[in-house]
Image 1 (cartoon, rainbow, N blue to C red):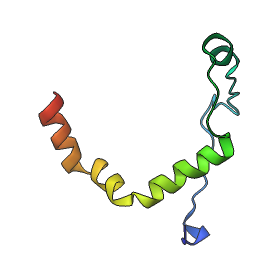
Image 2 (cartoon, rainbow, N blue to C red):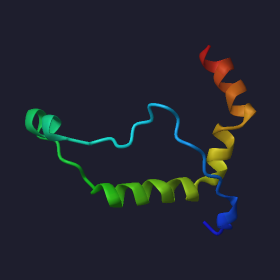
Image 3 (tube, rainbow, N blue to C red):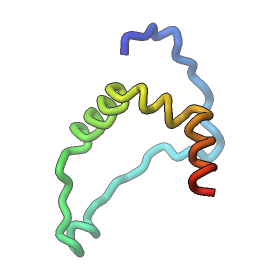
Image 4 (cartoon, rainbow, N blue to C red):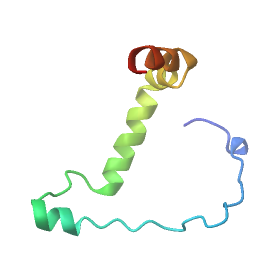
Length: 75
């Protein structure tokens, strides 16, 4: 991402923090015939790239302006 690694701040895990999440799609595959379109590795890379390519959108939806719009339209 072009940033200096010194910007990374490591923090202690919170008590009870899950060490791992096991993902199993057996049930949805068996019962519904679903299968993933992408492997996890390909999908996560595509997801990260989407967010990097849409930084302006991310800034908009995480700003106070979006929150004001959301509250006006949906509350």
